Amino acid sequence: MAKKGFYITTPLYYLNGPPHLGHAYTTVIADVIARWHRLKGEKVLFLTGTDEHGEKVLEAAQVMDKGARQFVDELSAIFKNAWDTLDISYDDFIRTTEARHKRTVKDFILAADRKGDVYKGNYKGFYCVGCESFKTESEMVNGECPDHKRRLEMRMEESYFFRLSKYQDRLLKFYKQNPGFISPAYRADEIKNRVKGGLKDLSISRENLRWGITFPLDKEHTTYVWFDALTNYISALGGRKSAKFKRFWPADVHLVGKEINWFHSVIWPAMLFSVGVKPPNKVLVHGWWLVEGQKMSKTVGNVVDPLQVVGKYSVDSFRYYLVRDAAFGEDGDFSEKKLVERINGELVADLGNLVYRALTLAEKYKGKVAGRPFENLAPKIKSIERNMDGNRLNQAMDEVWQIIRDTNKYISRTEPWKSEGKNLGNIIYNLMERIRIIAILIEPFMPSTSRRIFDQLGVKPQRLKDAKYRPFKSRIKKNGYLFVKVEVK
Ligand code: ME8
Image (cartoon, rainbow, N blue to C red; front, side):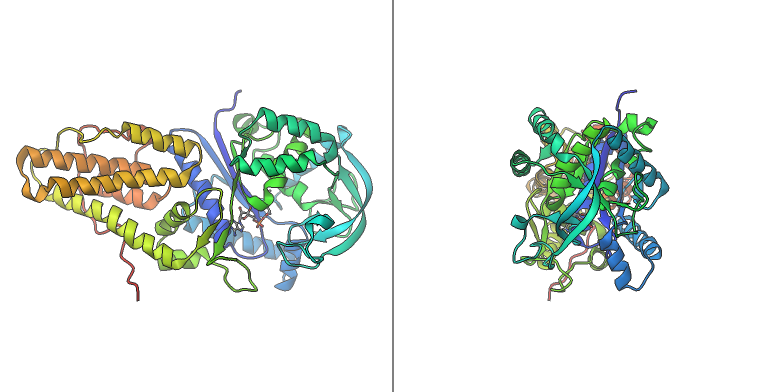
C-alpha cells in the first residue's frame, strides 16, 4: 500500500510545567497546517503529545512533592485541555509513558543493536538537565548552559552508545539529495556544517535514573530520554510494521523550535537509517517567541499563559495574532499591546465590519441576488495556496487580508446604500460570495470565526474546492458581531 495521507507532528512537550506561549505557538501552527490539508480534501494525521520521562520531568515532580506517575498524569491532562480550548484538531495525543510507545522504543533499540550500532562504553561529560543532553566545552559559557543558565555537572558513567558517527556520510548525502528536508533553508546550513565537522557517538542509556523506559539490552539501564521521545513519531502509528505506518510514513512535517532542530535533523534520521526506515520528508523549524524583547523565564516572571490570554480576548484572535505577527522561522516578540492593535485594527475593523455591513445589506434586500464577479479571485487563491503549501503562513494570511480589504473598498466604491434593483443584487452577490470564500480561506487560522460566518450565511462548512463564485445559495441569518473592540485605557 502506498502512502496516502498527510502526517504532521509537534514536538512532545516536556511535562515540567503547564503549557506556555511557545508550546501554544507550535501547536497552533501545526493545527493551521493540518486544517489546511484537510481543507484541500487530504486525509490528515495530526499528532501531538507529551514527553514524560527523564531527569527534567522527575525533578519537576519532586519540586511539587508528587510521585512522577501522578505528576505526569495530571500535567498531560492539562496540556490536552489547553489544546482543546485552543481548538487544536489533533487526531492523536501520545504520551511517552504509554505501552504502545514503550514497545516501539524497545523495537528500535533491538533493531539498532542487531545492526551493530549499539555498544557499551563509558561517558564522561557535562550534562544539562534543561536540555537533557551532554554539552561540549565549546557550547558552555562560564561553566553554564547558555540556554538554561544552569551550572553543568561533570558526569561519568557507564552507558550504552549509538553509533551516530557511522552515519555522517549518509546524512550529508541525504541532505544533498533532499534539499527541502530542513526548512527554512538557512536552518539547514548550520546543521550541515556541524555534521561536516564530525559526529560523536551518542550516549543512549542512563545508569542512575529510574524514571524512564528500561533499556532492553540491560535491565540496570534506562533509555536516554531523547532516544525515547523521538521514537514517538512511529509509536503513534503502531510501530514500523503497522498498516497505519504504511499509510502515513514518512511524516510530511515534523514541526519544531530551532533549539531542537539538531535532534530532529541529525539524530532522528540516523536512528531511522539504523533501523531501516526512511527519514521524514521535512523538519520545519520555527523561531522563538520572546516577551517584550526578553526570553520567557520563570525567574524573570514573564511567562505568558495562553489560557489567560484567550480568556481575556478570544481563541481566534490569539491564533490570528500568533500566525500573523511573527514571520515564520524568525523570532517573534509577544506584546499584549500589539495583540490589541491587531484585534481592533484588523479583526474588528476589517473582517468583523465587513461581515456585519454586508449581511445587514443582504438581510434587508428582497430582490434576486445574482450578478458577475467584479474581480477574478482565482490567481489570488492560487497564490495563497502556494504560500500555504510552502508553509509561509503569514504571507498567505496577508493575501487573505488583502481580499478582505478589497471587499471593504468595493463597498465604499459602489455605495450600495444608494443603489437598487439589479445593481444592488449584483453588489450583494459579490459581497456574499466573497465572504463565503473568505470564510473558507480563514478556516485553518480561525476555525470558530469561519464556522460563525458559515452559520450566518446559512451554508455548510466548505472546502477549498468551493472557493470560487457560484450561484447564490445562502439563507442569511445575521447574528451579531464577530469580534468586539477592546477598549484601551
Ligand atoms: O524540547 N517560542 O520539549 P519542550 C516558540 N521534549 N516555541 C517554543 C518556545 C518559545 N519561546 N518555547 C518552547 C522538548 N517552544 C522535548 C521535545 S520531541 C521528540 C521532544 C516550543 O517542552 C518549540 O516547539 O522543551 C520547542 O521546540 C518546544 O516547545 C520545546 O518543548
